[in-house]
Image 1 (cartoon, rainbow, N blue to C red):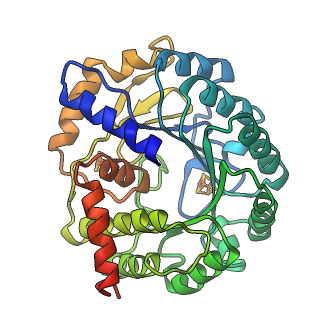
Image 2 (cartoon, rainbow, N blue to C red):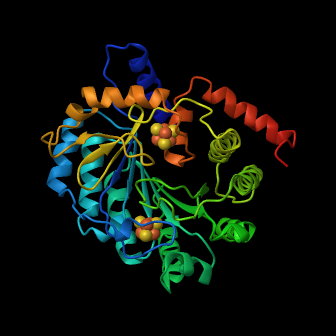
Length: 364
Ligand code: SF4
Ligand code: SF4
């Protein structure tokens, strides 16, 4: 965490000195659009084209960045469907030296996931690997949302296998997407997931994002239900349940829920968005978007000869940054909100404030 905060501090200094061209502190890579599930909350699995960058192309991109990116996220589709996924992540670790690598998976490929994580966690001890398994319901409800019988038992199997990994640079997380399909089961899902004993647990409101190609899907909660759900998450994040969760993890999580609640209540951003500046998203065809929610394309890495900086520092990217700073879009995407809140000068005082509010029972 200290290493991450020091990188964020240098990012902020770089931004303050306008002549320094800063790299993002967080980059997400969707390595494939393929998926072995067809969830009701997402339409990636049903979308074309299915282009993918090769490990060699990724290596060229990572080399061209020419610096460290402290927080990397890998997702898909289902990233472990790629036989060369371990090679891609290893290339990123070698060339970008991240503090944290976060991998989002539906958890249906236990052996593959286990083998891959054992290998990379062992090879890169200076990086913290977090695997986030997606659990959206218990038993049949999970299978119903995933559109595939047996997916719940697979994700449980993956959880049990990963739980046997003892490397200190590995953390096992669970994420739940809260949608119209599971809102009525929230307390049970939370209790179930926390009792499994993950190292972290995050609930995130379902959103219509251009990345998921799920516009008009009707998965989102209305404003009142969203606020009630976030209040519930906030209250639960402050409890000491989940003996593996560190106090800092719970505190940061509660800050996220609190910010998300404010966004939904006000229907606007409550802190500035650094999409395309502090964070960005690379898609399987090489496009870089400023964020995963709105399709603002900074450029294409293939067309730019795999030169990340050429796209990141282009006039098109600068134009999109200006557009974002004055745009009225808002979202509660965890990746975006986490990056935005970590980059704020008042981040630490606000954590302390949240801590004191818990203590006084404000969130009860
Ligand atoms: S939500 Fe994830 S697991 Fe489900 S279809 Fe989309 S990419 Fe696949
Ligand atoms: S507020 Fe959300 S949707 Fe708008 S640019 Fe930022 S991350 Fe993207």
